[in-house]
Structures are given as C-alpha cells and as structure tokens.
Image (cartoon, rainbow, N blue to C red; front, side, top):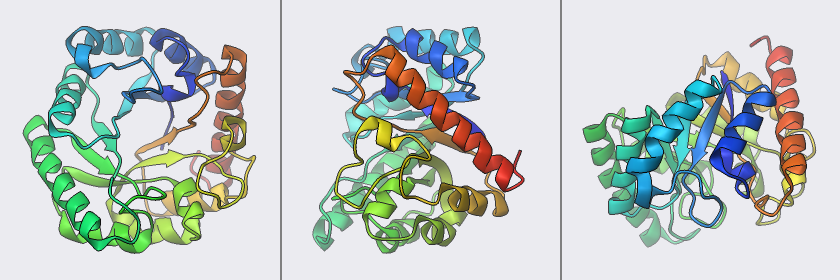
Length: 265
C-alpha cells in the first residue's frame, strides 16, 4: 500500500507548502485537492497552467501522484479534471455520489451520472472512484453494492472511507470486506462518535477516534490491496501550518504502525 495525504489538509496554504510538508511527514505520495472552497491547489479553471506545476512539485519532493479529489459530478468540470489528470500523470479521480440518503430516485440518478462519467474516464484512460458518503444516495454497504452491480467498467472503482461507513452505523472492518473486490482507492481518517460530520480536524487524525483502523488495514492487506491509502482530513483551512503538520505526521505514524501490525511493511 502507498501512504498518501490529501493536500486539502493544507487547504489554507499554497500547494507547494502542502507537498513539502507531506513529504516531511514521511508519506509516499499525495492526493491533490481540486475541492473548491476548501483549497486553492488544483484549480480546474486554470488546469492548463497548474497541472504542469503539480507534476514538477511531485518530482521536486519525490512524491507519487496517487489521486485527485474533485467531488462534483458536473460533466464539464469532470472533463477538466480528467484532462488535468492526464497532463499531470494522476491515475485516479475521486468524486462524491450526490443524491439523498434513503431516496431511491436520487440513488438511480447518482448511478446514471456516475456511469456517464465512467464513459468519460474510459476515454481519458483514468479511473473514477466514488465513496459512500453520509447524507448522500450512496452512503453504506448496501447502496455501495448497488453501484458496484450497476457499473462494471474497469475504469470504475470504489473509494472506501471508514469514517463515513462508521457514521452510517456500520462496522468499517466488515464493510471493507464486503466491497474489497472493487476497491481501487482508500480515504482514511478517524472519527469520534457517529454524528453527521467527521469532527474537528485533530479528531480526524488516525488513532484519535473510535474506528478500528488496524483491523480495517488488515483486511486490505489480507485481500492483496496495493493501492493508495490517502489521509483525508477536512476543515483545517484556518489551521496554522504547525497544526496541519502535527495532524499529518501523527496520522502517518499510525498508518505505518497499522501496516507493521498486519505484516504489510
């Protein structure tokens, strides 16, 4: 498994600052944030200018470009994301499912929108992943299995985030085992409690919450998963650089310990 961090943790700082300190914390790679409002990193309206910068920063700081997060399913915006991914050399784009929990009509709409985007992903030679998300149409294991059944393209995969599954009142260790056959990306963070939001950024740091992340990573390892394991901490846009670095480094140490505990490193 490749340990990475989403640059959104450093969303209040410029992209080079994010890359530099993700490297200092010991990560293998980076997931580049293209999340409007949470960062000014990969701004897709200026992707032709920024994508070469992303590629150069990865070389400068010796970080793998593991993924991009662009949550919206707007086809025009997603095409820009895919063009930027090809230019920079980013293999995976993670997006959100949209829709509303327990509304079958929005679940089908989400599946249809994702299927159209997967056709676009096939064209550009990238992989599109979606994760179960609290409050959205795809939010737990049963709804994840439905989208897996509906979209069979190899250009599509599941992005698993234990904090969302935990807040859907499921056991993430059992949930990852149920969908592992199609998992191509993992967002990882901890969570205290089962409320709707993930909590303060420091409480999202791996090891500070209630989730059995050792068991979660063990299931990944036992099933031969070798893809990205990307820390995704949101809400830290107003945090100092020192606060962001503490969260990144603490989580990286916990991730390494989990890998060692299950014999993956």
